[in-house]
Length: 335
Image 1 (cartoon, rainbow, N blue to C red):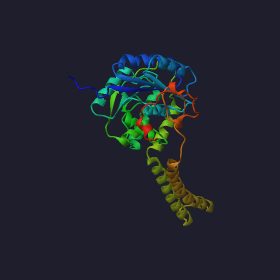
Image 2: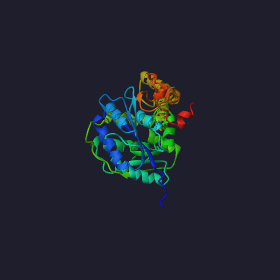
Image 3: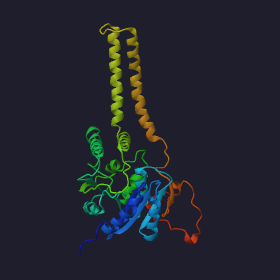
Image 4: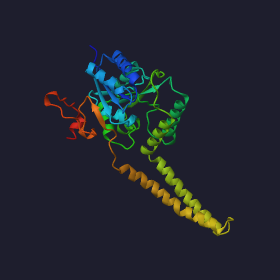
């Protein structure tokens, strides 16, 4: 008799932002390819302005396996999947974006790697079907992160991933200022890996990822998850101050031609640059400790959510028709 599957039950988290045309095809593909598992499909509407929420509502009414969260506005990709991970009800979370560029059938490769004892498995595109600027941008992103800044990042990791739900919730509940999931996982466990998966071109809708998004994403990661940039900036300022002092002494001694104005300017630099070095360091420390608003706020949900994540209290519901809260250890611990 074969051993029972470790990954028998899955919460499939599907972030959506203006993906009305993809909601139904995405749902059908996931059910067709992974229907043998105990499934929950959790759509997270990230403040869409099209018919995304209406399509998701219709699926939830027709299929009890479908749940959804809808934000009060567009909070961004990190917020969308973080909410999905927090409210996932199954032991494992499978992240699939609504654009269907990662075939649902490829999730079997992630599941096989998880069965081998990993807490998190990240997909790597083998034949990436994206514009050249995105491919080059991602390559530069990983080069700078891994080689230059020496960050521990899963090589080539994407958002197509399978993670233990407890681990996923732990990452989300850290409430980091820059909550980059794949940069946080290696800080918590060494049982993660990457597997090669197929990738396909987007068929419907428009990609929300552009050069500006990638640049901002990279800067947030490099500033928020390593202090090496701060160290480089502070060291450069100190070395600049030392050089300015040396130049000032050389000008005053007559070893280097220059006027009194040049000497005064370099003396000012000698004072300013070390101060700048200290300011850079302190800004990094102070900024990390500042209170922050929540990563997202929920306007509507088919699930029982933390009241603190509701911007406005929902209308009163008679006890006989009130939805029963999901058993969530992360929420229970806060009560």
